[in-house]
Amino acid sequence: MHTITLNAPDDFEGWRAGAKAALLAGLGPEDVLFAVEGQGGGLFADKSPLPPPNPAVKPPTVPKDFIPLANLTVCHSDPERFALLYRLLHRLQGDRTLLKQRADADTHRINILAKEVRRDLHKMKAFVRFRKTGEVAAPDGGVTEQFVSWFEPTHYTVRYGSGFFVRRFASMHWSILTPKGCAHWDGENLTFSEAVPKSEAPADDALEDYWKSYYAAIFNPARLKTQAMQSEMPKKYWHNLPEAALIPDLIEKARERENAMIEADPTTPREGMMRHREVVVEETFPDRDTIETLEDLRASLKGCRACPLWEPATQAVPGKGPAHAPIMFVGEQPGDKEDLAGEPFIGPAGQVLRGVLSEIGHDPDNIYVTNAVKHFKFEPRGKRRLHKNPTVKEIDHCKWWLNREIELVQPRVVVALGGSAVRALTGKSGTIKALRGGAHPLTHLDRALSMVVTNHPSYILRIPETDRAEQARQGLMDDLRFALSL
Ligand code: URA
Image (cartoon, rainbow, N blue to C red):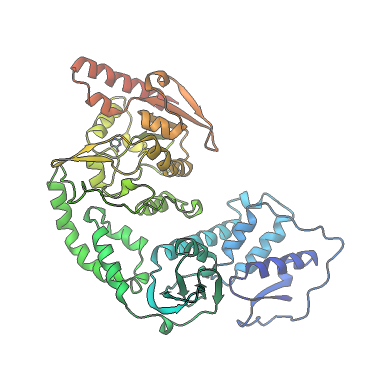
C-alpha cells in the first residue's frame, strides 16, 4: 500500500498530481492510500515514494466532466472521497462512459457527494454574515474597516466557495472563520489558513441591528412556509444569524398578518411604493449547478433580485405541477392572486384554463404550469394593483429561470400562452395569430421540444361580446387539445 499525502482536506491539486503519478506507476485502487497531512496515514501507510512510471501504462485521460466533479467532491468530509475518486479515475481508463452510468455504485456515490457539497456552498453564500471587528492598515497608507464572519460548513467548502465573496465584497477586508479552515481577503489577495475554534469568532456588534431591521422589513407573512423555511435555513445556522432572534416572533404573527393581507383584496399597494426610490438589483443568477431539482429552484427563486420587479411584488412565483410532466404551459407573469398565494394560475385566468382543460377531459394537475416572468408587475392605482405587461427586456432577463425549469422538468411539449411566453421561449416576438395551429420545433435548448402557441386565457376574459368570447374559448380548447395530442 503506497501513501499519497495531501496538504489539506480539500487539496484537489495534491490529489490530482498524486492520482496521476499512481496511475502512471500502474497502481490499482487497492494499492494506494490517500492521507491528509496531520490527520494520520492509517495502519497500512507506506511512506516510501511511489514507484516510477510504468512505460507500458498509457498517459491517463478523463472525460471533461470528471475534473469539475472531482474538484467538488474533494471538498466533501467523507473520509472515503479520495479513494472513491481514485477508483473512478482508474475505472475510467477502461470505460469512458462510466460517469453516464447513473446506476453504477461509484458514479451514484460521486454524484451524491458532489450534490451535498453544492448544497453546502449554497448555504455558505446564503448564511455568511460579516461583523465589523475593527480597522486595519490599508494599502494606500490609511485605515480600512475589517469584517469577520463565523460560519459552520458541513464540508470543506471555504476555499472553493470564497471566490463568490471576493466578487461580492471586493472592496472590503474580510475573513471567513470556520472549524474547517479559514479564508481572508485584503482587497487584493485571497489567502487561506487552518481551522479555528468558535472562540475566535467575533461577538455581536452594530451590524446586528442592521441585519435585524433588514430581515424584519423583507419578511413577508404570505411567504411563510415554516417547513420550507427551516429546510432552507436549517436551525444549525440560526445561532450565527443575527436576524434569527426575530424568527419565532415573526412566525407567530405571520398567520394574522397574512389573513389581513388576503382580506384586504383588492390589494392595497404597500406604502411608499409609488414614490421613486432606488431598488437593490443584483442582476445575477445562481450558479446553474446549484439548481439541481425543482425544490432547489423554488428555494433559490425566492431570493431573486435580478431585476427591479422583485421589490414591490409579494414574492416570486415558481411553476407548479408534476416534476416530470410531459407538457408544460407557460403564461406571462403571476397576477394579483398568484402574487399573494405564491402559486401560478389560481386567479381568473387560471379558472378559464382549468375549465377548458376539464371540458376536454384532461386533469389540469397533470400539467406543469409556469410563467415567463416570475414576479407580478403592476401599477398601483388607488387601492388596486393593475397588471402591467412585462417589457421584452424583463422577459429576456427572467428566462434564465424558465430555461432551467424546462431543463429540469424535460417536457416534450411546451404551450406558449400568449406573446410574452412566445418571446421567452423563442427569443423572438411573434404574433399569436401567425403562430397558432401547429407545432414549432424549439432548438435553442439542448433537447428536442415542440412548442404550441395559443392565446392567453385572459384574452378571453377581456372580450366583451359573449359570442366572440365563446369563439375564442373554443379556439383555446382546440389548441390545447392539439397540444395534448402530441
Ligand atoms: N396570468 C399568467 O400568465 N400567469 C398566471 O400565473 C396568472 C395569470
